[in-house]
Amino acid sequence: MNAMLFAASVGVPFLLWVAACVPAWRRTVALTLPIAPLPALAAAMLSSPGTSVPVPWLMLGGTWALDGTRRPLLAAMALVWCIGGWFALESPSLATKRHAVAWPWLFSLTGNLWLALATDIGGFYSGFAMMSFGAYALIMLGDGVHTRAAGRLYLIYTVIGEMALLGGLLAASIAGAGNQLGDVPSAVAASPHALWITMALLVGFGVKAALFGVHGWLRMTYAMAPAPVRVVLGGAMINAGVLGWLLTLPIGLTTLDPLGPWLIVLGLFAAIYGAARGVPLGYAPFVLGWSSVSQMGLITVLLGAALASGNSGFIPVITLYAAHHGVAKGALFAGSDETLSVRPAYRRWLLLPALALAGAPFTSGAAAKLSMKAEFAMIELTWADPWLSVAAVGTTLLMVRVFWSTERMAGEAMRTPLSWWLALGSVATAVWWLPLAADVQSGASYLVTLGWPIAAGVALGALAWSRHTPRPTVFGERSAIQSVDVQVPAKSKDSDVSPRPVSTAGAERASAWDARLRSAIPVLLGVVLLVVVAALMTHAT
Image (tube, rainbow, N blue to C red; front, side, top):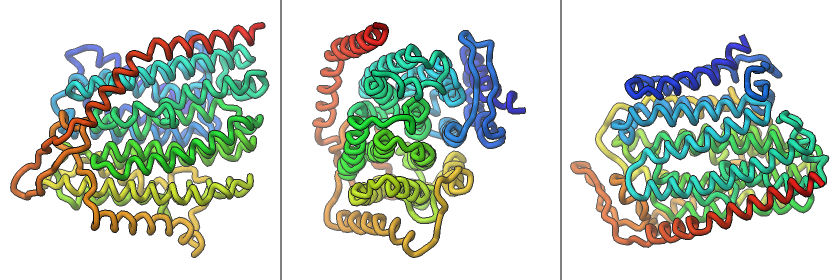
């Protein structure tokens, strides 16, 4: 049964993708998007712990397996793909593009599920590349010149990340890992070039995991991609990068003192800076994009602490945090789609994933934050607690900001999308189906510890809301999304609201950065290539 579930996890979406290659079948195949990830979800939930299945028919051979790290992340990613698949069928943004969405969607899905199961380097890298480059075609399903600019920006960062990742995996393979992904951490730890290989893997996976410094593609891409694509980008694909870190970095095998402390500082900065950048914005995908930068900053803190201390106990904490974040963020993207015209009561259900992301008591976010604090106490990293509290307040402010944005999207009633109820159910039950690394306690100290940053964030948000009109939201015409500085007329129950741009500063800045990146890409790629070649030659000698 395990072998059948594993084979179906990758085989079902792959065969559907093959069928989508036939133009006449694409509209029909698109109807299967919500069910294509179900075999992978069943494998994550039902397969026996430690199950492995050999796949000798692959070119280099290989094995598919699920362990304590892969299982929860595969479950979370498959669930988000199910939500996104339903959303793709229901969202107005893709209503006229059913014939175009099936092929890249299933291609990316196949890669995402393949990398989650693969224990061989060749299979893992192949799946990661399929997912990454397939996502480019999904982003380009949007409309307009700004979508093309966002696609170029994403592709530039993806190519840089793939080169760094390939260099790191090749160096680890030469160092003794061969084709076995499970041997990469020990090979890296034993290598005299452990620091450089680790940095290459950090950057390679960090592009997808929104590591601060290589996150520049994220905000514009989240804004310009169709809403269902945001769901899988921010809820599933981002966790592929985290999974890559957990499977390849030498966590618990060695200490990397020059790198670990710097990652802690970088993560704390990203967590606070992401919140500070996102709170003033008025367009929900922009806010959620910066929220991802902030949340991935917290995962970076955990990763830095693990590399600095050599404590493998951080692996289940990072796994839990990433899985919880992916499901909650996918639900937030599904509920903040500006193309849906619904009653305010529909939008207010965003409170559930928002509270989970903020770490409210009795949620999966609470368990993740308690686990983080417990591990920090074990390695005496309590000096970071005040900064983590500031980041927690910032997370709450971001969620208040999302509420402000979506409240201005009121409209006439429509049928509530099934994907939204699926997303809400996933968030509400995550505290039971996720393998929590900490019990959800109910003591007074627990409630105070997790509750006061949320209360402070809500109070600050309410004060700012009443005394200051934030930069307005952007919705409606997708051609106006590139500028955050727009003026929105008073909301009317009798008419649709359309934005009136008053400034093109945001578009000009985006175009300038796009031009700089396009001109710098040969130099950047050349530098990365030289570093990889030099590292391989040094190791060979």
